[in-house]
Amino acid sequence: MVVPAWQAEEFIVCCPGCLTLETLWFKGKTMQPTRKFEQKEGGLVYHDCGLTDRPCRLYLRFGKGS
Image (cartoon, rainbow, N blue to C red; front, top):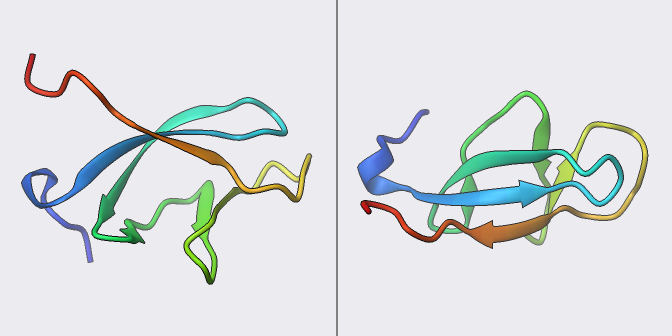
């Protein structure tokens, strides 16, 4: 189920393997589905690049609405 943007928080995600930067949406602690990223048990997010087994880093997007 896709959640409207006004009900979700936006995060920037960075893969430690390939350094991909993407925007992900979360409703509470649950990530909205994407093709490239997966949220596993414990809430950690992983990229499907295959270059690392380390979880991605998430950064809260600042400056929304400005």
